[in-house]
Amino acid sequence: PTAIYAELIRANKAGEITFKDVITFNLDEYYPMKPEQIQSYHKFMNENLFDHIDIDRKNVHIPDGTLPVDKIEDFCLNYEKQIKEVGGLDIQILGIGRSGHVGFNEPGSPINSITRKIYLDRITRLDASSDFFGVENVPTQAITMGVGTIMSAKRILLLAFAEGKAKIIAKAIEGESTELCAASLLQRHPNTTVFIDLPASSELTYYKNPWSLTLKDSTLNIKYDKTLIKQAVVWLSNECKKPLLNLQEEDYYKHHLNALLEQCGSAESVNLFVFQSIQDAITGWPAGKRVKPTERALKVFEHPTLNKKSLYDPSLSNHKRVCVFSPHPDDDVISMGGTIARLCEQGNEVHTIYETSGSIAVWDDDVSRMTHFACLYAKLIGADSELFESKAKGYNEFFKTKSCESGFRDSEEVLEIKRVIRESEAVDASVHVGVKRENVHLLNLPFYQTGQVGKKPVGQDDIDIVKNLLREIKPELIFAAGDLSDPHGTHRKCTRVVLKAIEQLEIEGENWVSKCDVFLYRGAWQEWEIERVDLIVPMSPQEVVFKRLAIFKHQSQKDLPLFPGSDPREFWQRAEDRNRSTAELLSRLGFAHFAAAEAFVRYDKSMSI
Image 1: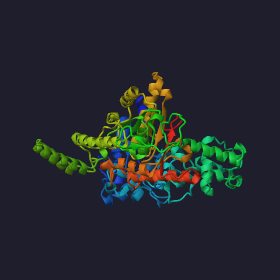
Image 2: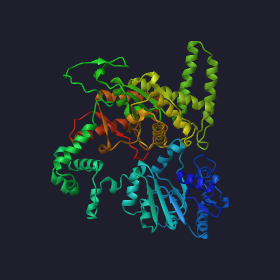
Image 3: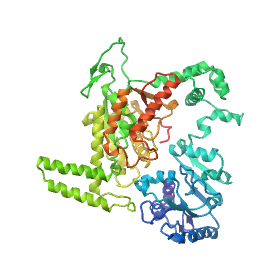
């Protein structure tokens, strides 16, 4: 809860609150774990809270990850004793893991359990792997406050944010209260409050299919707006296994959608509205085209930027200036490589803008391989090969000194090499899909430049860099990341930078901003729900392969990326599976059966980013 800590620090420094009489007990710590290690909760709490407030250090209690095994039981019993001696826990702040753990109370933890050493669930270790640079480096054990200890608190606050928490939040709140999901046991606590944002609540019945709640509460009056109408009818189509236009009134009544028909009229009118709404989003011209009556004819044209033929008549193009923002160097082609290629093929001026270097996501082996190539190339052209060999040897010796305890931290020189590797891959991928080299922009925003997993807060200097570029290009169409579940939160920060830059430019009187459409893409980590999309770009089998080859340009991320998240598939496989699933869903709903399709949502200011 770093945002909470930041607010507490602000209030403390402003003299609004004091921590002089506050006593804290942290939930857990990895075992074994030294307090100075980058992954330690001792280090985390000191850097994010305790070092910045007026708390008495003797009142701070955090489980000790350095204890000998035979001392842990006594430590845990004393931890419980200390809590009781100060009158118990007044307020307990919790997060929730994908396994349903609170603290490190994994599935099966008894409701009366107390502070103890516990083995970590596979899912928990997998989710922590990005902080440890590989699941093999994640400790298998932890010391955690027990469920019983947590339940003894007078008040409990459970916090969960973003799409990645949606399924487990639904299970914890609406599922059975069971020891197989520790968070669900909080249902039995008399004073628990859950704070979640809209993305984290998306699997709750109230948001996912609220019409089913009328079975439990006949007085519930659901107002169907356009989005909810589409959501309900798409759901009904899947439930009945019927295309949209084949749904009948009896299908609506059978599935408790009576109120929808009463509000909107006949089944036929609702079916047609939803069908046409989705149909309007499907286009082969993502930047639009000029209305021009033409006869159908078999023609081919010259591609505007690549040495190949095109199916698209350039005279029909709107020739828009398009900016595609990519948080990492490969997010653009993973999520919308087919659409970028189409935009270029149709004669639009496409700019790919890489917001960060992604340098920490490069394996040391890639640096060794590239520096070895540099040595061989130096010999080939008669350059000073001894200098290259000396540098390469130094890097390889340095790699041997890196450790998990230090966060596998790289030197500035190595980080620069890794930056160059990723940026060169980004340029190659952009050029492959048809972007002109001079329209590839490498920003390397300041907030990212820590050399560690943890990043600095977004600052005005980041926003100004994006503003200056936008002011220069004056785009008519912008694409930015809408999949915000990446392991380190970089996507969310980058998209906020873009949106803040647009907002400030509009305030400053840049007239072009009001005419610029902004669309959000997904693909690497999740996909948009079909009822939410505003733009769908179908792809042919050949375009699917062409996009795949663009993703393959990112060789440092091929086969085994450094930060793959919990999904075992490679990024190109995730993208193809999601694009194919979108196309298959469209087919089931009664539309043409495309090979694949990329989907986008138009940004509006009511969205939670």
